[in-house]
Length: 179
Ligand code: NDP
Ligand code: ZN
Image 1 (tube, rainbow, N blue to C red):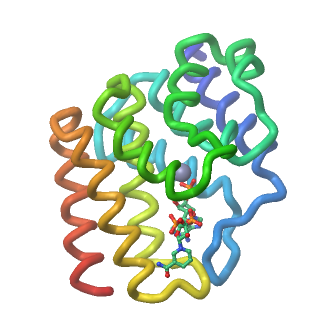
Image 2 (image 1 turned 90 degrees about the vertical axis):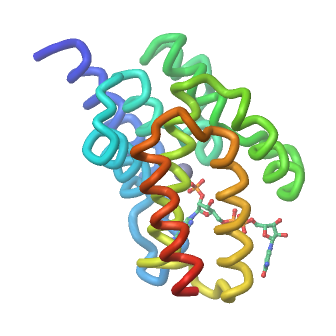
């Protein structure tokens, strides 16, 4: 087996272990790990992305933000590049929510290509989830605000991957129409 395959499987196993007690916000409280796997699936199978750094960062993208995982742990296990991309896509949880959301918009345009691809997949997957299995208790207005904020983040990464960008636009159009 290639080194890239081994690294990918290790990233999936590591994320599954770190997110093992977490659930998504949908009615069924789906296992959290479904979400990082969905990002890697969209990147590889909708976007044709075969860069192991991007695919591993997608699998690991919420480990720093949502678990007690540290960047130096990721660096030791997956290397400096993957750890750096995960850090780039992680919000600083010490900041107030509104500030974090504003910073995502500001940072997207200046992020690395790898981080922009992970962001694009993250927003595609979260919009799909909002359509198919939305968080419990979210009003139409709250969903609409989330769609519009996501679109503003994605405006900063336009050009990085036209096919995935078109997929985001089609999910956004469906979301705005249905909600
Ligand atoms: P949250 O950040 O609380 O929740 C959205 C995040 O939850 C997503 O970005 C995603 O993050 C994760 N998630 C988990 N399950 C799902 C799912 N099934 N579908 C989609 N996403 C899921 O919400 P907001 O982004 O709205 O941020 C909260 C802000 O909203 C605050 O500023 C608060 O003040 C405001 N607010 C607004 C209300 C309104 O009615 N407009 C009401 C209450 C609060 P990930 O990719 O990291 O998993
Ligand atoms: Zn995510």
